[in-house]
Every structure is written in structure tokens, then in C-alpha cells.
Length: 111
Image 1: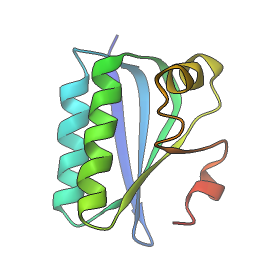
Image 2: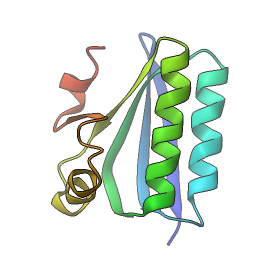
Image 3: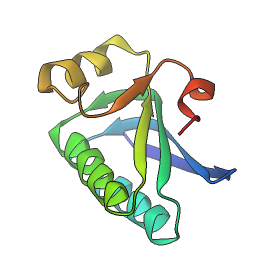
């Protein structure tokens, strides 16, 4: 399956909405998109995972790498996700302790 990535910048926060699957095939596109945002000066990134049906370790690695890059510039990456199958992966890997995960984008926007 493909991965659709849309980005919107509002009040210094970049919202990246993902639809599809984040796997070994689509993770490089996600990595490129995150790097572009950070390089353009947007270091407060909100990644909306509501439209993601599957994420594998390569996708998780891209998010962790993006978080590291953002933190190097005093930024952060926050996630929006209510899908239990995706949240379960974050819990199993312990990444629910690394990322701030919100059920609602409005709550997540307060960086």
C-alpha cells in the first residue's frame, strides 16, 4: 500500500498527516518529508497517525530519528493516534514513553 503525506504549517507548528502504511518501502519518503520540515525551520511537528493502518520498525525508526533531529534544534515531534493496533506497537516497543501521544490534534498543538 502507498503512503500519502500532507503537511500544513500553522502558528509555527507543522502538522503532517499520514494515510496508508509506514513500512520499509514508504519509510524513506517519510524520512525525507520530516527532514525537509526540520531543515525549513519547522521543529515543532505534529504527526497525525489516524489514517495509518500499519507501521513497522523502519517507520518507528524514522519517527525516532526525526524526534532526535527536532530535539537537536529545541523542537519536538508529537503524535496523534487513537488506533489501538498502532498504539500497541508504541507500547510494546516502549516508544509510548519517548513520544507524547495524544488522542486529539487540538490538545497536541500546545507545544
